[in-house]
Image (cartoon, rainbow, N blue to C red; front, side, top):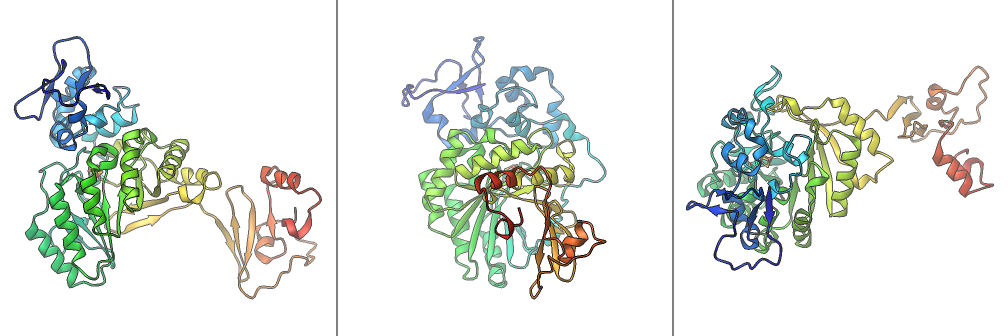
Length: 450
Ligand code: SF4
């Protein structure tokens, strides 16, 4: 377990504290022989994002050094050989339990099940390589394009859609490649929105980020630049003043980050989001629905409420892609619908993400909702709300026929769609009971018939 030395530590101390020995390459740390399982690091290093990057947990040996309880899990070595592992010391320090019931552990530590795939899975289920007119640029939707700026991330999420490339070789985009991309964008002025992704583009040096953003801004038709980054979650100290000052030069720049669980919204992560929001960067969040990690209505509710409190708009709730190595994390589509059903009416609209399935063969994102339209006639569309209230919406030109007497009719969906009844309300509706309590004596049309 890591322990960030508290504020009392002298930041300029030149001698490593007991419990940590950095080797010459500065890419490894080791525990002392003491029985203590805490690795202490001076704050000056801890808060330096480059130190965090250099000291990511990359190997099984390093993992065991930090979490001795994993000594018996040698099989994880095989998983890492296939799908690289990287965990920042910061993110590792947030692990409370050394097992997969801990969301941060499960999101970052390889699982043997990654080696067992169903036949439905593939390396590139979204077929991004088929929509790549220039290496590093995906052009699928007419007005949008995606730049794969790097294959490096500060942490390799076990559920990553781009497992086929992330961490295999840690490369960032070159100026030459960026020129080719700019040429393509100039010859396609219909592209107005460019997403810089990867890998994680905010792991690149400031100078490269500046080069990428200025190149994109040099294309007159590019209106909006978006950056997809998990850095605010797993490496919040990367959101430095220098970085923020680079980003704000190229506004409008939006950032979509990637919180999957409220446990990730630590004070450090919240401060990173605040630094970006204060610099005028609109923040959105993309969550992937993951079995055993966040596939519960209450967990998603808590996450979304926390995001909004921190000026991050829940944007998408993703169904897990059909990518190799993630079968054990996939949930059913039904689970996502159940979560959306729970959220609507319980949580304000600003905190409700759109649940999407990014369908195979490059079909794109399909928004999925519970069924709210239950019938339609020429004059009325019949909806049901989150409470089960069934109510009609008259189409333009429709005259009310609410008082039409049809003795053979019972109150049902057809009557609502024909305009005979305006609504059907479940008998035990608490909202209506409250309404009657709050407005005694108000009945009839002014209260929708209740
Ligand atoms: S940060 Fe994004 S690109 Fe990198 S491993 Fe995680 S999900 Fe994949």
